[in-house]
Length: 343
Image 1: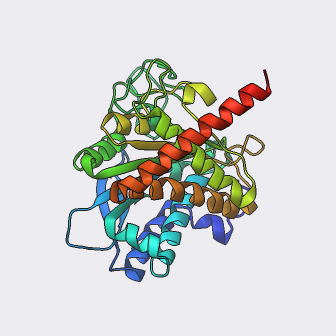
Image 2 (image 1 turned 90 degrees about the vertical axis):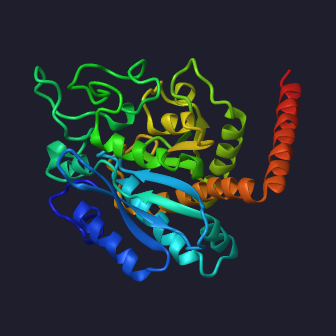
């Protein structure tokens, strides 16, 4: 997952051209459940595409959103999107729960959102850690690119950004200035009442980040987001004993404004999470190839926990709500016992 003078068979699959081929292959292999939807263009005129995955029931369905690769250098994110798609397509024919979810929900998965930036990171060693997209900035600036995850209309430009156009945190000249950002918001907004959750896959840090990124704002369902996030981190830990932290960006990372997940929560989508995958800082964005598989395996379990919760709350509401209530009571009891024991 670093430039080393050679391109192995595994890593070359993550060049975007091969991602497009892979998407078309998914349609050929699973024509009854997979379609490709082109929903926008990048600055360099590449198609922004997603896979729509679900069983056709002839009825209006709920939806799950997942995007990967909004930051160009985070190569493990597109790899995870491919892994996730492969797993749900291999599972639903033999697993009753996944089959039920495929009947009730459509999955909208964008394997690489920041396509221009992603391709740029493959050019050579000097471009490997590029983060932003590749749009030119104001006339008085010689630098390129906007941080797409600071460009959404969600407390845009107020904290956690830099208006130095050469900064990696440059949020753009205005909210929603970028084609990639507008493609996502137009698509999601047109069917926002259908979405049960919105997941954006990043690296690194081993965290689940919940809204909001601005320290002065709290999501109305903060307790639920934390509880479901804790359940997801426990599911992640059980796979390879990898510790993930859950919380708002100001609490566990740093303030963020203009993020996709904050925007989605403001649209009324109840469960929105940023997944920051491995590692914890040793290799940062250049994760060794031998960590790709375990990273995807554990993250899949965390994602599966969240989407199962979202599904069951919607389609088996009483069961899910009872579970939340019991979990909350147990959490409070454990917290009280810890407090008493440490007085």
